[in-house]
Image 1 (tube, rainbow, N blue to C red):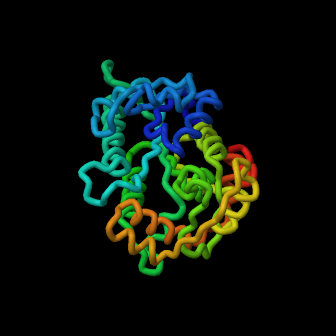
Image 2: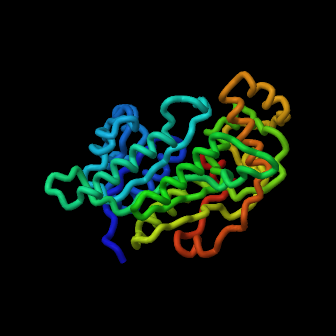
Image 3: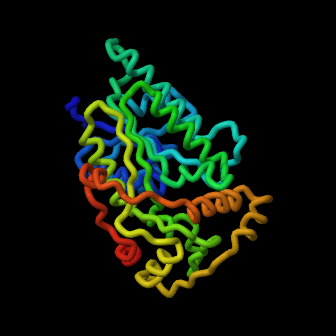
Length: 306
């Protein structure tokens, strides 16, 4: 067993999927630092025990400051729906490249007395299961190309890595744009079931994966207990939601694609829903659950908690 990881720096910790990970890392006893754009705003979103460092992923100097004293890194970087393909800086691409460059510099200077931090023992990052749909039935999307490039960069980083491939998150229902007022907007026909996972369960599994650090690369598919199509998941969510009645509205895919021709966010929605509706997830891997624990939160329970 390698030296125990105690201090983790998180990049992307204030978003929908970053917050539950930070909470679970703190709950598991890790010393957590989060690099954020605005410490004032981040303080209201994250546990008080988290050390907040203001910085920008475009600045390697800021990244080095955030990594001071860290044993490990967790990256929760994704491509936002409003980001366009040819933008100069994309966090999931350029931010990742900057973090890995700083980690390489830190670990290369690990014997120096004035090293800024380190050595960094592990870099962990979120990817997704559905990005594996790339190339199926002629489907290609630049956002998935970035995810695949990011995975390649991580595998070649020269430091032990953990990559998590989660299924769809339960948080998508109320925080991911599906809930519009008192309606759940479903796009297209959901043909394949997916194992929805709660951010809380995912965060617990991330924390456990850091505890199991042994110097090897680790790759985990993260899935919930029950496979549901988006339509079935919406019905379960509506049945258990306690803040007024919800209705389900179905929008045809052709309409979303037509609107996406002139709107980047709608185009993002069209692509991600086409992939989610058609990607056939593998069965959950029992070895992952044996290592990281079983998911505990059901979709019905998640909806009742809101």
